[in-house]
Structures are given as C-alpha cells and as structure tokens.
Image (cartoon, rainbow, N blue to C red; front, side, top):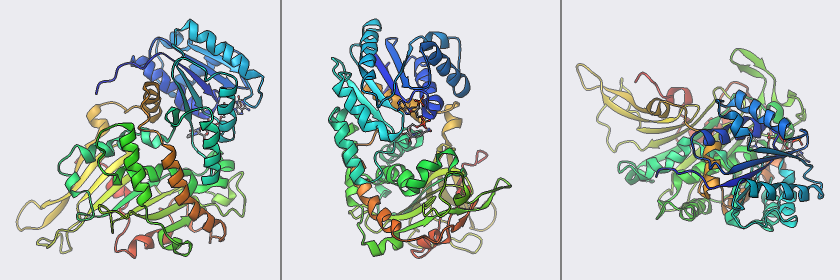
Length: 500
Ligand code: NAP
C-alpha cells in the first residue's frame, strides 16, 4: 500500500528537551516532513522546564537535526512550526496556558482539532499528565486525540493496572499508543511478511518441522547513564517483558484473518495466553539470570556492573536474562522458544534463528560429520536481512555436502538506510494505525508472566557476578539449551556475509 501524507495535526511533546526527543523524535518528524508524509498543516509544541521561549526551542530542534538527522535548506521553514511552553507538568496552573496556546495554533494552522500528546518523559509523570490533559480541557477537541506513551508501562502488573486506570480516565484504549520501538524496526515488521507471504515457510512453521527458535538481543554497552533506572528494573523488566515477548508473539501467532490492528493484536494476545505457566520452584528450569563482572570489550577493560556509577555495590539486579518459553497450543507444542538478552556481551546483535528439524534419514555427510540443520536467520539489528542456511553438494568429486547461506540484506537491496523505528511509529500514529503499538491486554499478560519470575528472583540472592563482560553470558544459559539437546548458534557465525 502506498502512503499518502498524514492528516493535519498538532504534536504536543512532553519532555521536549530530553534525550529521546533530541536523538530520535525531532530527526524523525523532520524526515517525515522531507518525504512529504507530514501535512503542511502541522505544529509541534514542546513542553519542558529548562528552555525559555520559542527561539530557544527552535535552536534546540535545529541542533538536534544537525547532529542526529540530515538537515537541508528547508530546515528553517520546518522549525517555524515549533513552539515552546516552559511548564512543570506537576503544576496545575500552567495547563491552562498550554490550552490557550494549543487552541490558538489549532486556528492558525487549521489543524481540525487533531492532537497527539507524546509523553517522552519519566514514567512517574504519565498518569499526572494524562489526568491534567482531560481536567484542563486539552482533550476537549473536535478532532482526534491520541496519547503516545513511552516505555516502561509500569514496573509490574499492579503498577501497570494503576497507570492504565489513570490513562484510561482520559483516553479510550484505541486512543492510547504504547510505544515498543522494536515494533517499528523494519525486520521485526518483516516477520509477519516473511511468514504470511511465502508459500515455502508457512506450511513448515510448526512443531512438525521446527525444532526450536532462538532470539538473541545482545548489547556491548553497559548501563551508561541509565543506572538509576536500570538498577531498579533489570533485563527482565527492561527487555524481556516488552521487546522479547513481542517478538515471540509475532513469531508464534496464527495468521490473522485480515491485516487489521484488532485481528493482529488478538492473535498476538492468544500466544501470550498460551504460554506455559510454571510453578515457582520450576523457574530455574526455564529462566537464567546473569550480571556482568569486569571484563574486556574491544581490547579495553570495563568495570563490573556493581562498580558502575549509581549502581548499588551489592546489587542483585540482572543485566542478562535467558529463558525458555513453551507455547502450549497445537502449532507449537514441544517447540522451545529460547531468548537471551543482556548488556556488556561479546557483540551487539539482535537476531532470530529458526532451526528446522533434521531430515528423517541422513544420506549425506559433511566432512564425516552429520548434516547441518536448515536455519532461517532473521537479522534485526545492526544488520537487517534474512539468511537461509542450506546444504549443497561440494564442488568436485564425491557427494560430500557443503553448508551455504542464501542472503538477503535489506540495506543492499534498498540502497539506503531504512527509516528509523520512531519515524515509522510516529507516522502510524498520525494516521491512526495502532497495529505496531502494544494493546493493554498484551501489557497485562506479559507483566503477569514476568512478575512471577521477578518475585522469585527478588527473594533469592543470586551468585553475581556470573559472566565476564565481553562474553555471551553465564554458563547456565548454555546448559538451558544443552539439556534439551541444543546449543545457541554463535551470533558471529550467522552474520550476513555480503560476499556470498
Ligand atoms: P530524559 O533525557 O531524562 O528527559 C526527560 C524530559 O522530561 C526532559 O525534557 C525534561 O526537561 C522533562 N521533565 C522532567 N521533569 C519535568 C517536569 N516536572 N515538568 C516538565 N518536564 C519535565 O529522558 P529520555 O531519555 O528522553 O526518556 C524519556 C522517556 O522515553 C522515558 O520514559 C524513557 O524510558 C523512554 N525511552 C527513552 C529512550 C532513549 O533513547 N532516551 C529509549 C526508549 C525509551 P527539563 O529538565 O527541561 O524540564
């Protein structure tokens, strides 16, 4: 489907001076503008405390785009649509001023009363801002009103329920756009297309032909400046509850009857409902936690997590988690979905490996050992593409086999960088397409699942640190697969080889 420009709209951005706005949001809005996907009838109001006025803000946005985007001559015209309100979101008085500004811009730019409220600030303010928007009349508008909300959505199920209640007092569920930026990534969106548009995959996409699925999301970075937040949350809440569980549901869902938001979301929800529950004492059989100690990355010694600034020196927080999900339905019974994610690992990479079952009878050998299984590898980042691992005849005498990779690299085909996830998600939101945002039912089910693990872990001191920085995680994560007869496919060996 070809995209036409988004409708006229006002974007009210809370957290306008923050890191996310500066690195991702302004460059994304500007890209949409340059591509002609933004209506001429648009305005952006930035809300934060530290800047003074519109000129200050416009310089701020310009600097952000000069640094993190691709600026060109039209930048001056673009930033003329930007306005600033110095405003403490906890101060009830200033919402009235904000309403006056918004109403005035609505008339000036003929925005038809369409409003997007984007909360790019600390989650502690999400509920307060949503309630004020309603109480002070900002949501009283003749056009559409949508709330875009950043992660994390709560830190467990009770806090998520509480936050949801507050938000839903001002916005309906279909007006709430909960961001999971993984859902904006090109190759995550491609999972659905690869599965449902290729006759060769969908018939094999089940427990008769797939032996296991592995999802790795590894970072080489440590906690950086997020330590205060991270030390209270850890990898389970920061990565698994949202991004990893979203990928599992996209891989495992049934084909939707139509590509509509409701149909896709309800198939994803059914996957989460089918996750095998376990008893508290069984958690160790399914999940492994880790925390990095001192180690070496790119020939530099990096400190242990507990020695990072703003981290409790006795911290019991996991910087790594590996797990095995079992999905108890007809399609997936018996197929483990293994996930692992962590900080300070050997390599930055997000990949999915679908490992097919061995052929029923092995007629060929590769250098005297058995055949490699077929793998479908989906490269999410930093590479984007897919690789199919096959066995072919080794050229020359005899019938020895050789493993080969059939590669598709997104970047080399499209010849350009794929759009930033935020650019796509903002555009979806402007057009009212919530498919790639998380529904409340998904949030609630994934918290329920994760809460059980975090409660057990909170009550048991872990033997941390248990992996050295610069490695692929603790030994127990390897054993998780070994006891099922599998192993983690080494991510470095799976990379798209441009020369193939
Ligand atoms: P940040 O850099 O700390 O920015 C916070 C923003 O909130 C600033 O603009 C700050 O502006 C404003 N603010 C703080 N207190 C305020 C108050 N009382 N009234 C009005 N404004 C206030 O945070 P961030 O990294 O941009 O993250 C924002 C959200 O995005 C968080 O939920 C985070 O989890 C999520 N997120 C961020 C990233 C990322 O790459 N940064 C990625 C994924 C998700 P003033 O100090 O000028 O008031």
